[in-house]
Length: 304
Ligand code: CP
Image (tube, rainbow, N blue to C red; front, top):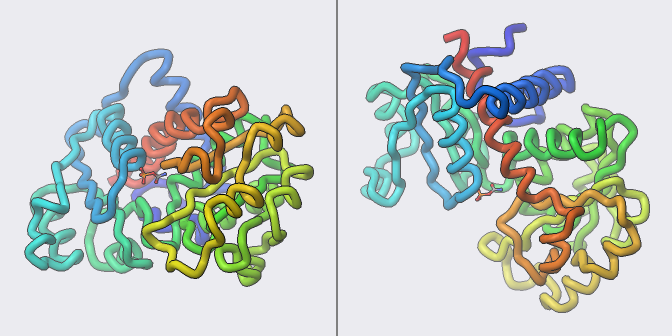
């Protein structure tokens, strides 16, 4: 099956070898760009970033990734677009395709919105986060960062701690990491880390101290205040006590690799000194995001 000309709506439907091919391409692009500067192979292509939810990292790295391949980015601002007048997502997507977009990158609060568009527009659709469902390029950049830090994922144990229920990042990682040979352990409050997550083929444990001893890496998740109802969370102090990574916990695991998709709630799920420690790979994740998204653009656009 060709790797190019395709949508990327989630990691659930990709095989381990397809994921590995994207990671290998991202690593090649990283070496090439660092040695020789930006590329021009997508010159003449236009990508539209339809972000209907807030973003700093994902939007800026999809933008930089396009520039580093010679593609143009069609300006789109949800607040000043006709979506603010009630235009549907599909009509907005069709409009930017009619205006010349060769690919759509979509972030939307509605689960399944990129999948819906992918069957209805004649250009590749890339999911930049659909509600609580998936965030596939985040899952890919996490996998690349872990692969770099650990020298590979086969036989490694990765813990994901926090608000799993509302985390599209956790879902994409749970779909990807086991296909790359890693074991995934989840931990979080029962209301935010429900036992049904086991259906993803991962283990669920009660607290951060139940996973840290065994993990090669830990991914801390943000408490998503915007998606959580009031009764789902104990107090912030209690959350920090049972699920937060502080310097005392980190000191027991000097080799532990620490990830966070960000934005971080410093002082809640991650202490300031942990976020800024040499064990934190948070800003490497962001750097890798650019190269993963370059590889995803190539996969989507190169053969078209
Ligand atoms: N990790 C992530 O998706 O961050 P943004 O919401 O800033 O894009």
